[in-house]
Length: 273
Image (cartoon, rainbow, N blue to C red; front, side):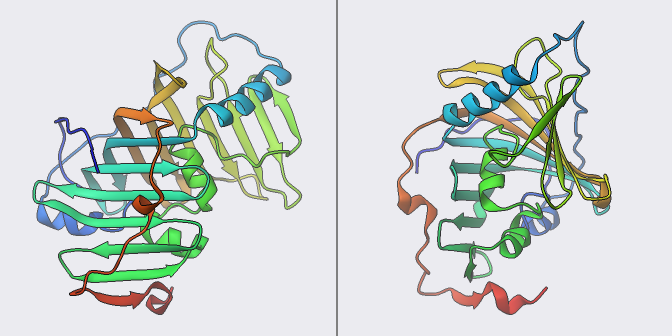
């Protein structure tokens, strides 16, 4: 797999986006920082609902896949850390994450339409399980379905298509039958999402994402930085993309793994909660 390598300042690891962060944290051990999203610059255009709904629909068509290196910085109750990640995404149901060190990958996670696999090369462990929200949570710590995670990593608010929406200021509010709501803000002179929030039935924010550092690409404006926050868990995860390659062809084999002969296979479901 061809990946571009670039050095970036900052240090250490452990993510809301990778379970193996803990191991990398032990191997290194230094401080990192997460930059808060910048405030809106100048007066923001007042949008109408049709314009924003059209923007969301267009962006769903514009961004289908990405291959990139990323600098990931984490902050939470356990402390602060950072690491480099190779990210491959093919919407809606294919994902590959590799946590990298100077000595190579310490964790390779692949997810496809059938299963999720986590290969831990140093420990010789090969964990295989059904592609479920629960198993995804084990490796990402993000409480979203696979199609929602792949959308988020492509800078798309993970809002269910077809939900009724109302416009409050420059924020589209999507409501589901179960009382859950999604809010998507467009605090910019351009019709691009700047913030997404998921609220539970009690109106409490469970998860949010800020989309910043937009840059022009052949596919359209793409955020160079995504900041994911989980207020209930006091966790923040910042992803800075490094020269993302968008809408390229990604072979299906990239999202599958064969068990190395020396590795011990363990069912993910056997790990319990």
